[in-house]
Image 1 (cartoon, rainbow, N blue to C red):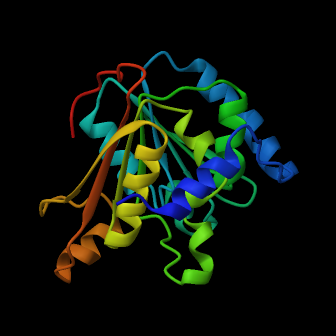
Image 2 (image 1 turned 180 degrees about the vertical axis):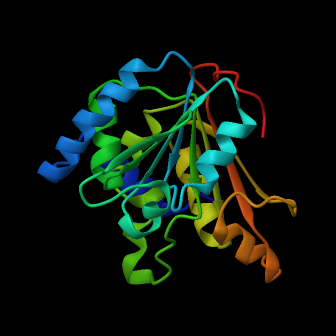
Length: 221
């Protein structure tokens, strides 16, 4: 059954831009990121909310013909990839790691007309309290900006509610979307995934594909 709040949020967003002012810091960092993006000739994958960046490095290994953008707002987590207060961007082989607020980054990428082969949202903050529900990405006003960036999206979560909301939000936008239990993997994509697997949590995977254009073929997960 369709979630009425998701439908209501979609109707409220229709034809309206998200007008929160962009951070000057984020704009300056994006100017540096733009140079790396412009230099890429490979298909691009976007690990958005990459945490420590382990998932980005795994994606680069899994798809050797692609380059990977890994972004997170946590400076502490990105320090493992050489990111610091005065070094918000670091390139490691085919991965570019950047310290940026995702809400601003998604809007800057969308305004710039950037396109990726696939988006990855691994274990985003679920904001489990009902009062914070509208902070979850599928109900956030920046959601359409994210979906404009690629024809495919994969989300993983240890919370079935968030996974179901993501599936319904994708369906509401006209995408194909499947929500399944993620098979146990010997090589977890993120430290969170390793922790959840070790504790026996069921993990959920949502695969979304835009109906209106064929996805870029970078292999199947």
